[in-house]
Image (cartoon, rainbow, N blue to C red; front, side, top):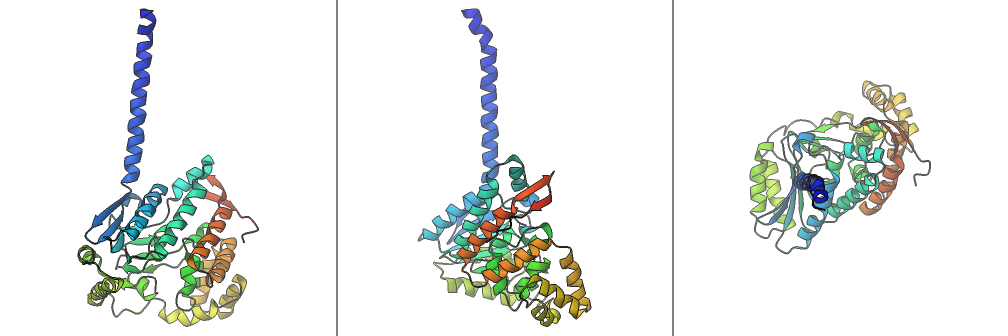
Length: 355
């Protein structure tokens, strides 16, 4: 009997070592996900810091799962008076959702494709309905999921490093995360223009377009954060007053004309249409350099994506945020029947009945 036990000992030790290795791997994975986002109480504020600088603070599913409950906790906490969100690394606030993870899940047949969008949109709605002042410091690249984490809040502070875009029509998708709500509510038809062409706005132009509420030098953000978190039981008006003081002191590009100013009359005219086909006809009929450039850009986009986006904005203009996000969730799932080649989407199959 003893020899038999002795023969089993090496196997038991190997099994034990394997268990320890697996435990360490699980702990390491958990630790990595925990550190993807930092959630801290600083003075009067709850501070959310996206902490994936190497991949431009791309929004992952574990980040969403951590941010949402903490946001709701702070919203209900009588000792938390405002919520602030920012990114690390100096290059991006948040460049979008973690598309690679979603693609990998799609290839493996996992539920992340459903769960990611549902939980992300629930978080977007929580931001849009948050009862506490919500301040997003959109320093650097702000696209896709990063827009959803910022644009629905009370205050969005852009800097000279901010780069905003909703480029989804170029990849066969649509400007989600509530794009159907905020884009048609921008001045004139600029929201339709940004959504359909993926045009990029930089620096102060993000504020002049109505996407950001304030504009501050990037180097002043640490001081702004200290002043915000040091406020004593601030109201929304107190927060606005402090942000206004920083905004008014900022002289960067103060006299610079809004990049689309000279084209707004044409944008409002050509993008005022009842269909995507009519917009294309308007651009062709105009025939000027600006119109032809937009025609060239739009011609490179997914035709299905363009038509879907146009309808999304038409419908969203008269909906509340929650209804828009419900519509966009259905659209996202209709879009997620895809064939993948490596990490690149090579073909997206659309369902006919989108509504």
